Amino acid sequence: MNETGIFLKFSILKKEAKSARILLFEYEVRKKRRLNLVMIDKIFYKKMLSKSFSIPVRVNYWDGDSEQYGEGTPEVTITFKEAVPIKELMRNASIALGEAYMDGRIQIDGSIQKLVKAAYESAESFFYNSKLKRFLPKQSHSEKHSKTDVQSHYDLGNDFYRLWLDPSMTYSCAYFENDNDTLEQAQLNKVHHIIKKLDPQPGKKLLDIGCGWGTLMLTAAKEYDLDVSGITLSEEQYLFVQKRIKEEGLEKRAHIYLEDYRELKKGPFDYITSVGMFEHVGKENLGAYFQTVSNYLSDDGVALIHGITRQQGGAFNGWINQYIFPGGYIPGMTENLQHIIDAGMQIFDMETLRRHYQRTLETWDKNFHDHLDVISEKTDEKFIRMWDLYLQACAASFESGNIDCIQYLISKGPSGRTLPKTRSYIYK
Image 1 (cartoon, rainbow, N blue to C red):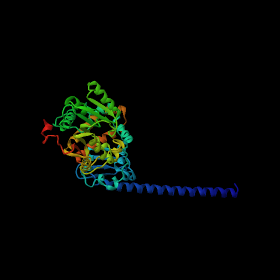
Image 2 (spheres, one colour):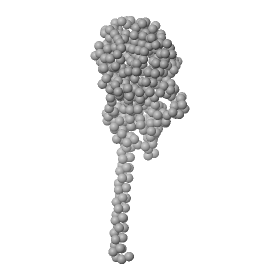
Image 3 (cartoon, one colour):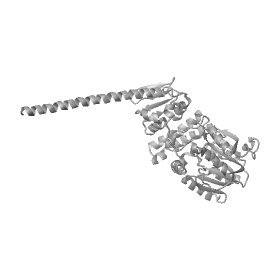
Image 4 (cartoon, rainbow, N blue to C red):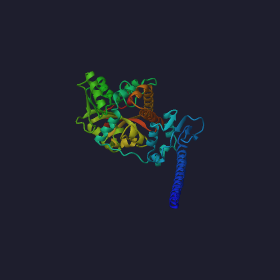
């Protein structure tokens, strides 16, 4: 090899060595940056979780480090198999943490209900951190979106709901008159409790807005001699109720409509019931919802509106909106009262059923777990973790008082002008 060749080869080797040094330097910089980010993540997590629970909780971090928050033996253990990016937590903590649990990136050993309840009970919990909950998904409640939202949840299939609801297929808060009531008995109690509050007179007309699988409306037809109509946007529920009407020979007394509650061309009605409905209409449509109830009521007509309400003011949860109830909004109690008054109606009575809904959800979750072998045949682990989280987190929310369930007994015109003066008639 001549001198020129040697020089060229030396130059190439020199450049390659320089490139290698540059690559090594860049690798070290990236490694250090990653280590710094991990340290920042740990600092953020420790600050976020240190005062977030009212019970002792152990947290196992992704790097093998472990911390206990709170005095005493840990009641629940949280294991982060990997860090949930701070950016995602800042965007929406409930969505980020809920998705991480669904995907198995977070493991919880112990009761989810107890853990969520403990987070709601701590005044310094990340649940109340305005920086973590200020970004929420945008919502729409046009008739098209409302139909899509309802069907995405209720049209999962009757077979799925039949596994963990009671035989009446009632998907709302039960009413446990006695501690030893079964779920089926408690749901039947609730139906009669609602109808009795109306002081129903035989032959009059009742409209059930959001009638579900029809138990309330068909009970009103069979046992209280009322002419009933039900509205739903769920095709599964519509077909189910249609079948029940035919099987029970109620074609002349019961009618079911697959229609938006704003579009029904019927009425007026002497009585209106609506159970678990207003939580789906959206904050911007609450006023129109109560005005629609008023429009359908006859003069001095009576309505029993039953739904999840926050005594602390309205709110919605990003994770539940995205994965369970698209478009859901839990209104505040004073919000509902103002809309009722603005719609020309008045309150006759109110009753809170918070503890009843807690027990209802606990029973649903137990039933859900009792049928995991069947559910797992048709779904995957992510779906199972999602529904388990939903049922237990909601039970915790009721248990802690973060949300409530309230029955509003209202009349069109002066409060309860056609109703008995005392509550005793309800319990006869």
